[in-house]
Image 1 (cartoon, one colour):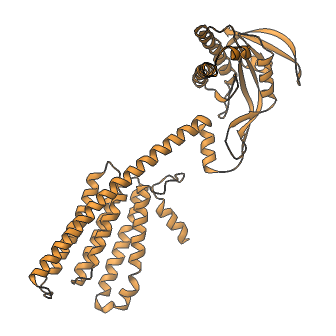
Image 2 (spheres, helix red, strand yellow; image 1 turned 180 degrees about the horizontal axis):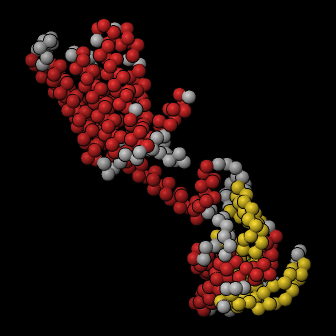
Image 3 (spheres, rainbow, N blue to C red; image 1 turned 90 degrees about the horizontal axis):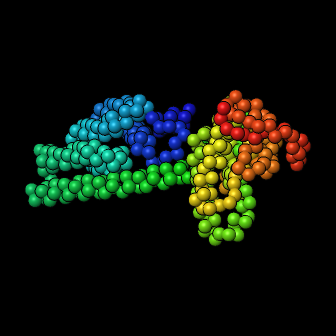
Length: 407
């Protein structure tokens, strides 16, 4: 029960999916909880000396605890700046009241220096004014209490020279603490900024490899990802007679050519809502209707295929290629997911995938061949020419169509 309450307190105002251990909001919650824990340790001593000021100390302890319970409430309501300033103020009042209660130098005021060193972890690089406000408050109260203790009529144990020397040392200590606090704040924020940049870079790289929904599921769970889709469309594109092209060009020229082709195909797949699955040599594979199911996946694949042919013709003219593009489209049920432990890859499996691959390999140069199922879903938007039944290895006789263009 206590552990559950502590966890809820620490994570108040923070996204539960967050993996940030050094989030300023989380640190504010933790510090408020630590102050409560330290304050509770004073209760036995206050009860032991109840008649000698312990009752007042007990009142200060419970007042501090009561006020600090509002810190996670403020964070939960997304008023994070208020929560930080409120915590700083409550801590300052707690120390000040304790010093005024005992009226003698018990070194309680030195807890304010601890507060100066904690403040840098509360504020981002855009909140320097708030940092200076907090550290100035603590420094002023600390030096003020030191002066009050030294010139109090109840204490006359030090000579004037000793008092001035002690006060100057105290002031220099407070100033050094503030400067150290500022240095810590600069370095902490620089580290946070670098961590944020690295996280963003890693996130972008991951999203280039896997769909966004799959990335989120992999982050939150290690369970095998395998989703069933009753209907999806798969597109395969392949360059005709690619082997002779390889012999005519250097490896660098070949890679530049493929890179340009696939970059254009990536843009087209993104434009028409297809999910790029992978490239296999000179082959390109994409799918529609996953990882988010829809009813227009066959239409999306047909639209993308037509633009791929045109884009490849432009590139072929630029590179003086005497070849063309074969595209095959098939639709049906598939399983999509991520398997294995290393080098994750989002892939799809099923007879529809094999059939789409055969549509490409059994197709013709500069043409797109589609299966009967793809034709049925896209015929109201696109013109087709029936090719008839062809023999497909491992599947048998399959009725196919050539995609001609929009209606």
